[in-house]
Image (cartoon, rainbow, N blue to C red; front, side, top):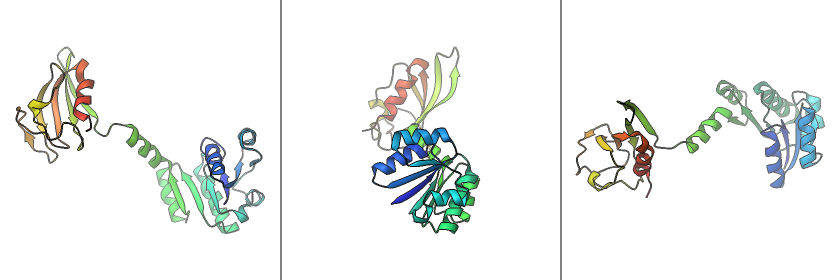
Length: 221
């Protein structure tokens, strides 16, 4: 498929390379001569200096035969304009645009952009995979800060699930002060309480052992 990419920067350049490797014919438009030169050195003569908010520039880029236009500049207004010009002047069958502002993402949908990629959603998605699903919450330091009150929610597939509290080897000096079930009920933290998925353990932990406590409680099977 012949594809026109608007923007040859941090998104457009690797996207062009990836699409070429997948067998697509790609052409990139960018206003910055330095970015165009870098693309030409790396990928060949697949890029040119041009303003994709101009009908002439899109025509010269071959928009009339493009299967899709993908607008990935840093400016939402340019991405929107390029896609609209391509759709209504060249009947490009598929328009794809990055929207950096969540409000603009809704606007892009309303005006008929076929696929809107929200930069905010991408960041949140990446953060969700990068950050622990069951973070350690430091509730408060105590006394000389050698101890702290912490809370850890246990994963459903955790190695501790189904075991009695007395069967779990916690770091030296750790005291469990409360177990809270997923539905908010408090359990008396004696040795016979059985740990269930999504239980939250509130514990008094030596500060230098808190990381180890989190690892023990969130270890997966």
